[in-house]
Image (cartoon, rainbow, N blue to C red):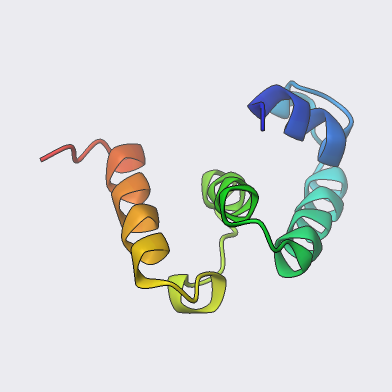
Length: 85
C-alpha cells in the first residue's frame, strides 16, 4: 500500500494540507470501515498505521487479535514518536 495512493483513495488528494475538516472526517470514517472489514494482516496494519498518523487509530487490542501484530504496532508508534531506543 502506497501512502500517497491511500491518501488519494480516502481523501481525494495526496496533499493532506489541503483537506477540509469534513473531508478529513469522512475519509477517516471510510478507513475505519475498511479496517473493520479487512482480513489481510498486512493491509490491516497499513490501514491502522494510516489512522495512527491521522490521530484516529483504534486501541491495539481492538485493532489486532494477534499479540505479534500489537507489538509491531507498538514499535511503529515508538518510531513515529522518534523513540528508536
